[in-house]
Amino acid sequence: MRLRFLGKHSAPGNSPTLWDTDAGQYVIQGFGLDTETLAQVGDVPHGELVIRVPKELMRYLPEDRRDARHPTPGPAT
Image (cartoon, rainbow, N blue to C red; front, side):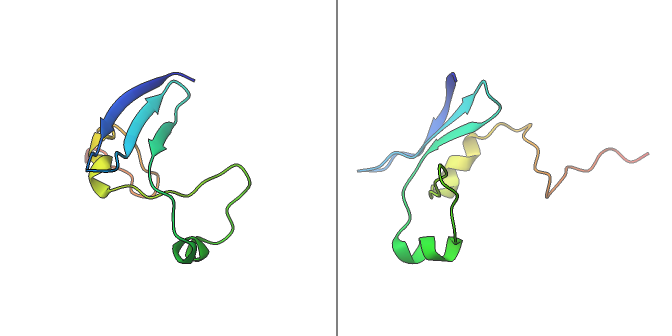
């Protein structure tokens, strides 16, 4: 998998980072969750992780991303 750097949200002592990949996925460096918060998430399948990142990091997502839960309406016909 090849990574393409998209952006970083730096603050003293941390630097959550976002990359795009040639595999149609994003790679995200973020923070682990505390036990209480992770308990609210529920079971996490083996091989998966739940992380948190500052909302500001999402500004580096490409504008043409699609979200199936909130589709962009097409032009009126």
